[in-house]
Each structure stands twice: as C-alpha cells, then as structure tokens.
Image 1 (cartoon, rainbow, N blue to C red):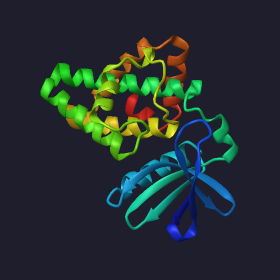
Image 2 (tube, rainbow, N blue to C red):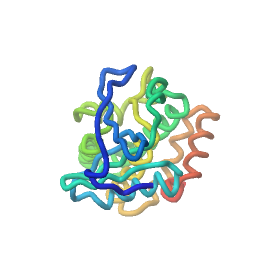
Image 3 (cartoon, one colour):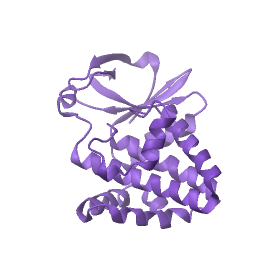
Image 4 (cartoon, one colour):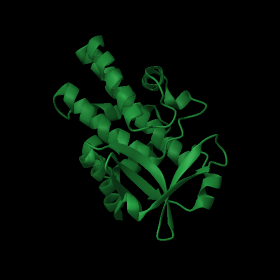
Length: 219
C-alpha cells in the first residue's frame, strides 16, 4: 500500500488491553498501523517480499517503512480491534498449528535422513530466525526446541502470532528446508504431517494455503 520514510510518519505505542505489553503503533494520514515484522538494514529484499505478499497477494493494507538502520512492515488496524485481539482466535490458531506441524515435519525428516548433527543445526537456525524476526514469546533456544518437539495440537495455549507471522515462517522454513535437502521435494512429503489435524481444521488450513503464494511452495 505505502512505502514510507521515517519523517513521513508518527510512531508511538499503546498498552495492550489484555496482555502486559506495549504495542507499537504507526500513524499516517489519519490511518493507524500495527507493527508486523522488523528487518535489518541488509534485509531489504526480505522486507519487500513480505510487504508484497501481504499487499499484492493477501489484499492487506500495509506500510513498508524504510529507515537507515532497519526496515519494518506494518499492517492497518483500528485501535478498537485490540480489545478483541487475544492472540488466540480460532482461525489464527488453526494456521499456527498447521504451520508448526509443517515445521516439525521438516525437523523430523532432517533428523531421520540427514542425522542428528544436521537436526541440531536446523534447530539452531530456527531459533535464530524466530528471534531475528521478533516472533512473540521466542526468547531462547529452549523455546525453539519446544516448538520443534511439542505437539501443537495438544498445547493449551499457542504463541500469540498472527497470520503474517505464519506466512513469514512458512516462507523461511521452505528456504531452509531446500538448503538442507538440496531441493524442494521435501515439501510434498511433509504435507502428510497435516493428517494429524482434525479434518475440518485441516481443510481450513489447506484452503488458506491454496489461496496464497505459499501454495507454490507447500502443495
């Protein structure tokens, strides 16, 4: 929607009504945007790719903010939406669960076919990725290990990620998996891990995948 410079916008933060955290808010021409993801100065390509995915392919109203030391992507929101933003809406939960099942499927196949050393390196890569992209509630390698080994269908509470995080993680997961296996064939095999989801939820997740550019990666 917009590519803006720091001088074009006003940035503030507000207290989330239901969680003990400050929510960064960007104001531009009477519109309000919420921070989605932050990228380093040398990650312009990744930032633009996420911004294009959200605006062109998902129809979201987003801002790509260019600053000397970083890039950031912001999604349009009405402030009153925060009142109902618990981070655990049923549809979002399904996307997170499906995403984590694919993540765990890649991890399991790396361990089985490439060995425990490569699996450990993959776990390290995932931990660094989640921290670098500032995924909520990912603060240590232990957290990443739990995401790779704990069945998301049995968790009482999932991480408070949004759809944008799921898109970003699945894009990066495919890139990493292709690097470890040397080709993209692994993605077709991994889809079988979704069979563990309840049929209605699996159908919802697959339908969501098919409607995004992620379908080219995971179908």
